[in-house]
Length: 224
Length: 224
Image 1 (cartoon, rainbow over the protein chains, first blue to last red):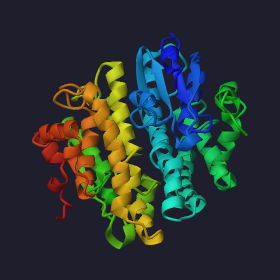
Image 2 (cartoon, chains in turn green, red; image 1 turned 60 degrees about the vertical axis):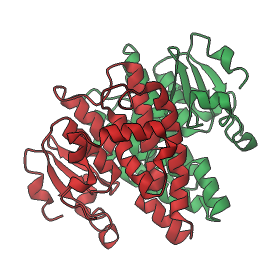
Image 3 (cartoon, rainbow over the protein chains, first blue to last red; image 1 turned 90 degrees about the vertical axis):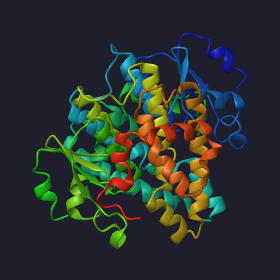
Image 4 (tube, rainbow over the protein chains, first blue to last red; image 1 turned 180 degrees about the horizontal axis):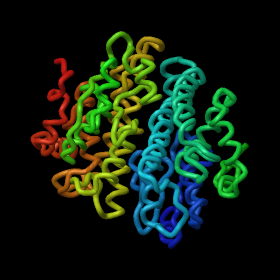
């Protein structure tokens, strides 16, 4: 965290990220899709009980003590969806990640929220640690329940909206949320074959250069 | 649910809502702020183990089996934040609930997501039932933990952005999310005096006619 002060003085945005964090991953994908160069600042959310994200310096940037945070245009933003909406609004000359049709925009945001508020908050590290350590529950079973429920709903909706990707043939925020969610699903033992539309779209997305650039394995803090 | 078919044929939007659902409450507030007339269709999410929201008819409208859903412009939308963004985009002549400045819009969305994805998914009925019934945990303790964490972060951010309301002196989506969250906090025994900025803003909001119209007590399905 000592490097924070120097990094945030650069003109390029600085992304505070953890390679496996699905919310960080979403923002990395959108930065790549929009071709916005940025400085990567790793925040290790698993080391020393999350000491880095709970440090006083980091809390000033993001009082939720979470990754990602994005320092951009002289200000600091938190919450992946808020960051992505900001990038879309303030960089109108870059590739759009929201469909132009209002109804399809709403569907893209509905799909986004199914993952962002419907699944991810229930499969994140802090919650699973509480389930296992405090309540002696089975973290995998807990995570699987919410992942299956959310991905079922996602699968139903994209049957109507999909083309090559979740909303027609253009990559959108829904795809950006889907990719890290698919990784998390498989990590917790959910078989994607149960969701044939999701699986097909996932397979179309993973080869795109922007999705390779944003992938967890491409990050400087990646550990196998 | 038998009435669904007839209701959705009307030209006014139909809101599928449960009086105490905080996500339904947000949409009610935005409909009131924008002066959009709508038909209220109660969905009782607590009766018969949630039979209404899990019915086949309802799942067609919202595959997440949750309230709210909004039938509008001949289509059905789910997820409160997606619905609110849609209303803002498609009703440009109504009162805005997002600030016009891009940075403040981002802060409004960040505050929104602190509640929408940071707190609400962890205090909702299904999760608390699992905590209590399956894991024999204390639902109140669980809810309090996440409510306090999220509201602490919310309080920190509004110290910078607030005026009479969360973002300056105009009511925004952040206030719309805050009001039902304050109700939930008090319901789970969290003392709002710990968050003086939140409390002051809450007290400024609750007397506004739109907030009275959207309040849980003003709904036809309200039960004390």
